[in-house]
Image (cartoon, rainbow, N blue to C red; front, side, top):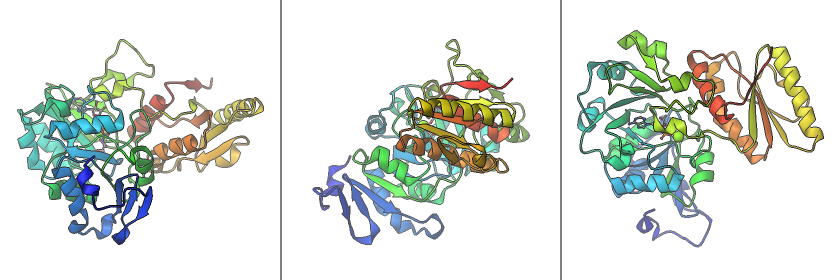
Length: 377
Ligand code: TXA
Ligand code: MG
């Protein structure tokens, strides 16, 4: 944290209302910004903090990011401390212009420009060979760098206004579900970082797709809203890291994205996925929920708009509508966090179709469940 930024603020008060709608929570400034009515000057103090090596959490269209100057190894190190993140897990560098990739990467293949033309700004991260200016402290010791040009206007104005490239992992404590609302960031990061920009809900709700273009064949390292088929339409054949396709935690497979090996997105309660015929899934979840409630446990159920009324036991919450997969992606992390707040000990969820966006949803859900899945015969 940058102590000097707060010298003129009232440190002794935990929650102190400052002028201009700025809040101070445990020495972390919180500013509210409306993406649709954004005035660049609103982000000037945040941009200055980044220039000075501070930590600023900001909204993106995927999830909230925890930003620092990507080319300043000591600023990047603070991200690892605030998140409690293993130091071999590299950070994504956020840029505001496509041409910025030439400053950060070398031997850039034509496919990178083709993907950027179609999907940037947006929820796609491209891995390229890094140039020397990118410190190993940002890339977790790798010779490659992950780069993303986000679509959220607050994120882009902040990056452009700061004049630095912004390393930003998801702004959660390591191992917790990624934050899709400012209140999630406030819960995890207050007192640990300099500023949180509250820009409302992250619209997509799942982290960006990661594609590795540093080798001979493009490989997806993390599924997301930009699907394999969407990218193949633009650049031809794309492979998928076998770890992503595996439905079991296979110790012989090492993921190419170091972050994918950690137990991620985990709620505190024990999450189990039920897969198969909907009626049988609902019956099985009702049965299991009653059994746990009878033994005095707290039970949460992740239902959909279509099935909510059919659950008889426990705390039932709807993640979204099966008619709109985007709503399920957007609701996933918030519902996991809500069940944590309620101290649910067991959480049961329906499963989702494992194709296109559903593939990314199931990837996160399986990890959150530690691959616990019950299949209906
Ligand atoms: O949507 C997103 O990508 C969000 C927002 C804030 O932009 N960021 C995000 O960052 O999800 P993070 O740190 O939570 O996830 C980054 C993932 C990790 O799994 C990491 O291992 C992988 O990207 N990664 C980063 N650089 C890499 C590299 N050079 N090679 C392989 N994997 C890399
Ligand atoms: Mg993350």
